[in-house]
Image 1 (cartoon, rainbow, N blue to C red):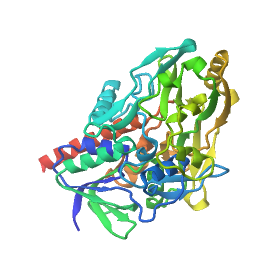
Image 2: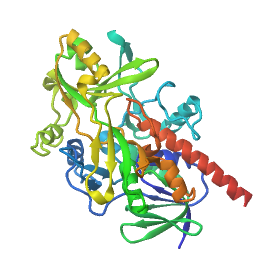
Image 3: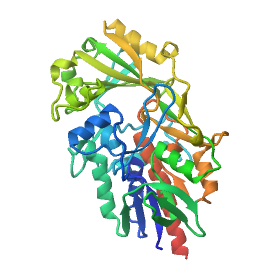
Image 4: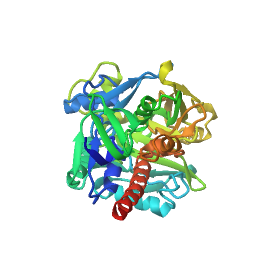
Length: 441
């Protein structure tokens, strides 16, 4: 059986960053994309709508129930990952935000350089138009991934297209459609067992399956781990009437037809303590609205139209919207704890007071936990051992987790770009060490 120099598990944003760090690598690489032979049906309304609009199945796998009334969690199972459904905000964290300094990115300058490296071939819009509002609020166009340099309008397929471009650049590469069921140590390598019964052996493995995918894979691979934990954000959602009194007409800031139209931030001592996304419903497909209302996806290709923007949804992340999850694979659903209390969240209440001062009416809701906005900080065991440390020990340093699982702390802003920068830094350092070892041999 062939032994690959490198195996990459996962083909989402972290996988793309890993492939970017492997540019110029002369060894053999195998990429396991995560595609499922029998994808799950259903899922969040946005995913159902996007799948309907593109006339393809929603490629989701590993449906996992969540305690209470929260909807189930899914793992994306295709090249491009969840970026194919959500799109991505590529926010560059400021030096006072928790951007993940450590052994792989030792300074903010290194972090910024890694961000630039993984964005180099992507087409990103927004982020430059800033306006200081009263009460310390900052308004800007959202910084959105909308395509690649060679296909700038590829939209929700941008990450998939970018990954396919990277795959074509590596000389010795094999791409496997499938899901890894188990990782095991071999004598001088690591063995990957796929869901179709085949096996892959590699000297080094980069695990970029996304936090939930990484968690479920490690649960199967390390039976001694009886408990897994991770964090997410469960943001607030407010539907506003008369938001134009505070922010102006959405016609003035709609971002090239994107549903995500405007970003609001509030900083304290250089750190972003509140991040809000303002949406233009007029830019949403009708199928998203009908699916959200429980009617199923309908009227493919239709948009809502401007008349609907008299009500605008706003989604809000603060330092109080974190949710802790505990997963015991042998005991049923994932448990969500530490749900935020809006009345005790000063950042939220400050924003609501600001809106009220501009005569904006609103109603407040809380997003159900587990929707995967900001998964991070994966821990193993009742002692909450960081995933880096646990995997290093279990696989003698041959396996490296490179997705957002390894980010112990994130801020209120979307952390996709920060996760990609970390993946790039980790893989780049490991590949440099591997090349030095090969040269020495």
